[in-house]
Image 1 (spheres, rainbow, N blue to C red):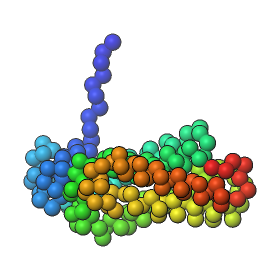
Image 2: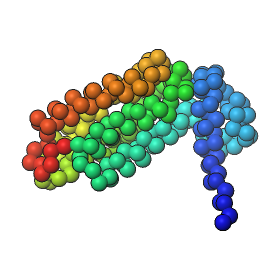
Image 3: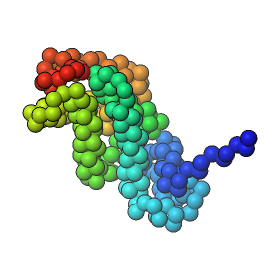
Image 4: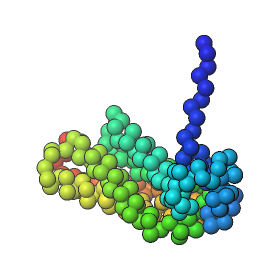
Length: 210
C-alpha cells in the first residue's frame, strides 16, 4: 500500500510556526519581518499577502493558540460524559491548552501583549464570549429550559471564566509559566472549589447537578 505524503502546512501556519520559533529565540520586539521571511523560507512579500503587519502576525499567533483551545473545548463539550466531568476538563484545558502552546516563548509574552494589546482586547472579548457560551451550554444540559435557568448558567459560566483567568498566560510571570505542573495543581484546586460551589448553588431545577 502506498504511503500518502503528509499534508503540507498552509503558508500562514508556516509563517506563524516561524514566528513562534523567533519569539522563543529573540523575543517579539527584536523580531523583524526580514527575520521572519528568512526563518519561514519565503519572501517578505509573501508574508504581506497574509498579514498586514508585524502586529497582525502577533495577533494571529495569539489567535491560533486560542482557536486550538476552542477546538478542544468544543470536543469536550460534545463528549458523552456527565456535565461535572466535562466542566472540569473544559476549565482545565482552557488554561493549560494555552500554557502548553506558549511555554517555549513565555519570556516574550509581555512584550507581545504590550505591542498588540489595543487590538487584542476586542478579540479577547470575543474569545471570552465563545468560552462562556460553551460552558453555559454544558451547565444547562439536563436542566429545564427556562429563562431564569439560562441567566443563571450564563452568570455561573462567567464567574468560572473570571476565576480561572488568573491562570492564563498573560496573567502569569515568566517563571510561573515555566512550571506548568505547578500551575496545573493550583488550577485543579481552584476548579475543585468552583465545582463545589455549583453543587451548593447550581442552575436550579436540574435533572443532573454537575
